[in-house]
Every structure is written in structure tokens, then in C-alpha cells.
Length: 389
Ligand code: SF4
Image (cartoon, rainbow, N blue to C red; front, side):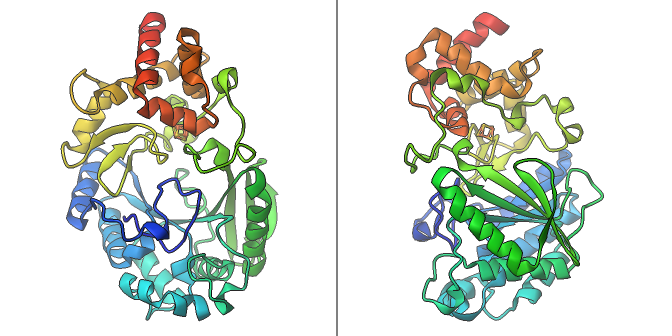
């Protein structure tokens, strides 16, 4: 929706923090997004995630586009830090200009939530990490960090509107989710912030599904909590070594990613995979971590981009990446490879030239390197040709 944000997270995978709001960027227009929805609907896609930056910064467009995508059969999910939805007190005053620009200042939390519901938003992901604060920030002068009070108010308002359920489509699942992103030294403060939010909403742990996933509950409904490890996300280039996991050399070979489970074998009958991420500047990636740039919506239709992944040629700006991504998908269909396709690719590169995979530390960082570094890409395609064609 936008590169602009009301928060200043150091870990932002989209690299779009508040301090960068004034940078001029190529932006997708509302018309362009409508056209993309039309195309996605024509080829049978079933959902759309609105992200940013903070999608509520484009509140009116968000309502319009959610309504439009719902009519076209693409169920909309919004991914938000919650701050602009639940803003009140001093935090609201301090952010008056920004809230006015978004068209939100004169609305209260329940009005905003009702309008989102009316526009067809089916699911809400709250992103919470160590850059939210447990300070009673509504009484302080902190304006660029979302207070937990605001997030809690937003979650309460969605619970009041009946979002605390599981959707009858498995691919949607829980309609309210909290995604807590942390790692190493960030884990403690993030856990404290999540606990603070859950306590303020009055939610109690109902069930632990795994070490990373649990369900919280109160009398109004349920919230699904997913903990993500930042060390496995993005290139995490701003972090010290003591925060990151240390996956170097051979430790990279076992990295796993559900994006590379063959589609028909993916959990939920494959409904979750096959995502495309379209950045605010129109570049299309195969994953929200900007891993594989495969096209530009100003140059080609979505159908043509997808065809370019399925039948990659050797011409055009994105041909190398399309060939690499296609080969990874082919690899994932070989017996015993499945979700370790990236690890297997790095093993192959390592066997050609171990130097090339030195100094890669994180799971998604390794994957993104393969999506962006020509030396790795060429070594992988060479090894792939040798072993798998
Ligand atoms: S960046 Fe790569 S490893 Fe990370 S989630 Fe995306 S596809 Fe998976």
C-alpha cells in the first residue's frame, strides 16, 4: 500500500520505517492496484494481504481496495502494527498531523474497526516486536513508537466486532493473529511486550500448538500468536553477530522454508503457498522477504510474470532470477528435498566453490543472497544443470 509508517522498527523487512517517510519512491497508484486485483482474480488467486509500511497510512484507499478485492473474490487481510487503529491520549495528539493525513484523526478505534469490517477485511495480523513499547506512552512524549495500549485497544475492538474466530476456510484460519518477531537479545523485551498486550486485552493462554505457535483466549474470542525468529528472516544486516544465529558454511545446508514445499504437498493442501509479493514500487517478488525479484508490473502483466517463472528464458531483466527460482521449485519436487531446496542449492554451490557461501549468517539471508547475487546464481545454475537436468 505504501512505504510510509508510523513506527520505527529496526528490523523492518520492507525497510520502510517512519524516519524514511519523506523519501520519494515510485508508488503503485490505486488504479494500478485495482488492475492487479483484476488480473489476480482472473487467474484464480484467492486472497490479498495489505502491508506497507503501515497500510493504515492509506486508510481511505485501504477501504476502497478491500471492498474492490472482496467483490473480485480476493479475501483481504491487513497486516498492521495497530498504532493508528488504537491511537488515543497523548500518542494520538503527538501524531495528529500523521493521523490527519491518513484521514483517521477524527475517528475513534471502534469506528475505524467497523469501517474495516464493512470493507470486507477478513483477517488482521498485528505485528508486534521489540520496537513497540510497554511505557505508558499515551502519557509520554514518545510519538514514533507504538504503545502497547494502542495495540491492545485495537485488538479489543476487533474482538468486539466478532473477529476472534476461525474462518471456515482453512486457508484463512484464525481471523486475529499476533506475529511477534524477535531473536537473541530481542527475545526478552519482545516477550514482555507481547505479554503486556495479552494482559491488557485480557487474553489467557489456551493452547500451545508448538514452540512458536499458541492460542490465547478471552470471553470474546481467540487470538493466534506466532513467534518468528528474526535470525531466519531477511538479511538482518543491521544486527550484531550475537543476535543472529550462526549459520555458516555447512550449517546452511539444512535450512528449511515452507515456500519450497511442493505445492500439492504443502499443509492445508497447498492453499498457503504460491504467494507473490508486490512491492509499493511495482517489483514482484516470490516472497515477502524480497527474496527473488521476478518482474515489474509496469512492464508486464502478472500472467506474463508467472509464465516467466514457469518457463524461464534467457532474455530480459529478470531472467537469471526466474531461472534460479524455477530451478529451486524443480528441486523441491525431487524425492527427499522438499522444503530444504534452498539448503540443497547452497550445498551444491558449496561443492563447486565453498568461498561463495562464506559469511552468510541467516536462513532468509542465504535465500535472499541466492535471489540477488549473480555469482551465487550462476554457480547454482551450473551445478543444477550438472546434477538435476
Ligand atoms: S526469504 Fe527465502 S527462506 Fe525466507 S521465507 Fe522467503 S523463500 Fe523462505
